[in-house]
Length: 330
Image (cartoon, rainbow, N blue to C red; front, top):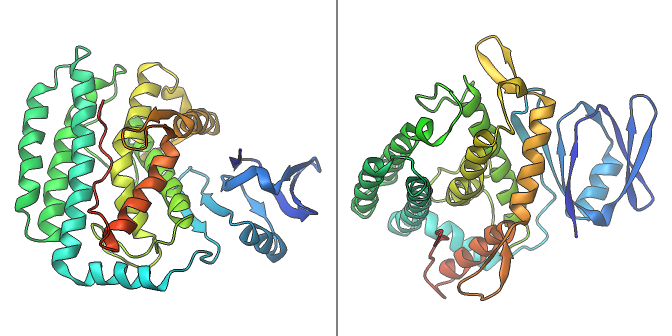
C-alpha cells in the first residue's frame, strides 16, 4: 500500500536509482522506495533538482508545500496522464451553461449542508444541546433549491456555516473562545485547526481528482481562477464535515491537541511541529478508515470515497447518471 510522505526536517531530496533519498543537514541519509509513496508533503526547507521533479512526475506523485507556519502554499502536479477531450468539453459546457452549473453547485452545497446537519445530530444525541441550530439549518437546506444564482447560493452556504460554527463552543469541551471563522490569519486554536485540516482535505481531494480524467481547474460552486484547483474546493466541501470537522472535535475533546501545541506570532496562532505531526497521524488513520458502502456493498476507505465522488460527477457530465453527492447516512 502506498502512503503519504511527510517531510519536516530541512535537507535535500534526490533520486537514487528507484528510490527517493533524503539527506538531512547533518548528512544522515534515508532512502524511500518510489513505489511506496502516494504523495509528498513538505513542511521544512528542502532543496531538490529537476531530476527529482521528473522522477516524481514519471511516477504520478504530487508534491504539496506548506510554510513554516503549516499554512498551505502550493502543489506541484505532474502533467495530466489521463486526458479525455470529450470529458473536458463536457466540463466546460456544464460551466458555461448557467443552469447546468447552478444545478451541480446546488448539489455540492446541499451535500455539505446535510453532512453538517448530521454532525450536529450526532452530538445532539450525546447530550449537546444543538437542536435549535439543527432546525435553523434544516430550514436553510430547503432554501437551496430556491437560489437563482451562484452568489445567492454561496450566501445560503455561508449562513449554514455561520449557524454551524456558533455551536462549536457547545460541541468542544475545551475552553476556547471561538466566535466566528477567521481565515487570514487564524486568530485562535480552532481557526488554526480549521485552516490546517481544510487544506489537508483540499490536497487529498486534488490527489484523487488527478487519478481520474477530470480537470481540477474547472469548477461549479467556486469560481475558476488562477493559482488554484477550484474543483478540489468544490468536492472538498462535501468531505470537510466528515473528515476535518469530526477530527477537530475528536482531537480537542480527547485533549490530543491542546494550547501547548500552538505558538503565538504577533496577532495569530500557528501549529507547532509536534501538533502538526499529531494531526497528520490521526488524519492518515481517518483516510484509511473504512465504511460499508451502501451501493457498492463492500468496504471502502474515506480516501476512496473522494475518488468515487469524481467518478459520479463524470457520469453526470456525460449524461449517464444524475450526480448524487455523498451524504453521511449514520
